[in-house]
Image 1 (cartoon, rainbow, N blue to C red):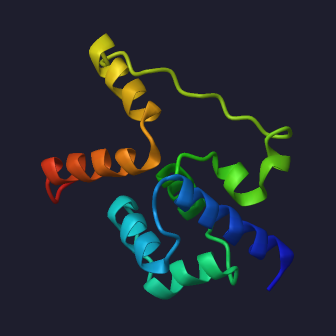
Image 2 (cartoon, rainbow, N blue to C red):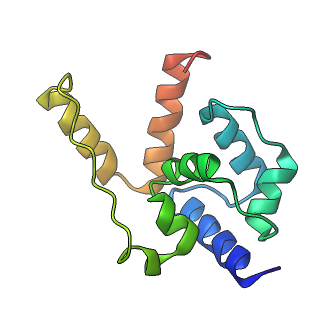
Image 3 (cartoon, rainbow, N blue to C red):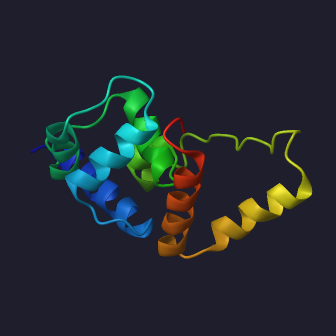
Length: 130
């Protein structure tokens, strides 16, 4: 296993733990495929990402990073990337009112486990199309 892939797998596992998720292939597999709009990945692919045998392609890396609230370049390269590449945070969409913004801010202030519960509730309310 290369150092680069090993370091990526450590960052991915840490990001999953920070989000209140157990760093297991089954968890990553389920969450990734419920979010990714392209062709789903296999359990083995998720396992390879977590064991340091491979690194996701850029489109998949972006989805994985978003799942766990990270910038893609930080997940891929670690903190050393943050000084070299910066990504401008998007402004709130115009359609979002102050109450919605306050709700998002409150969500972001929650501990990881409560954020996971809120995500699960929203997904359940949105139904299978979400």
